[in-house]
Amino acid sequence: MKTITKYFLKSLPYLVCIGAAYLFFATGTRVDSDLKGLMHGIAGSFLSIPILYLIYDLSKNYSQSKLNKELFDYAKMQVDT
Image (cartoon, rainbow, N blue to C red; front, side, top):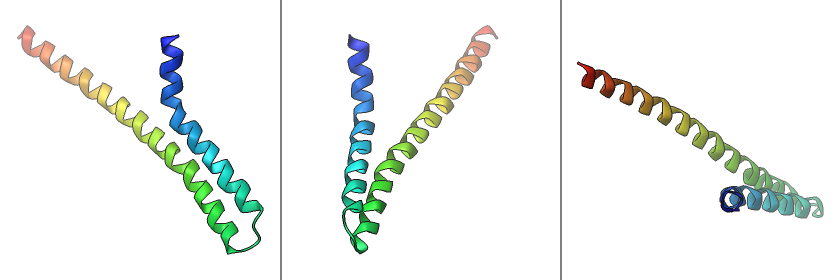
């Protein structure tokens, strides 16, 4: 139960952004003016910013784990010598 809540809380901002993007896109399709382009642009931003943050976070965690492994191996080598 705890892990389900943890994953739900982690994914909640992404779900909110997808919902907001849908609302802006749906509102933009009902308007026939320059406001339509603005609404669709905002919807695109609500979709792209969380995706970019997710990619950044995954790459940061990957590089951090590689760095930690190298530091651990270096420390182990220093202890052995």
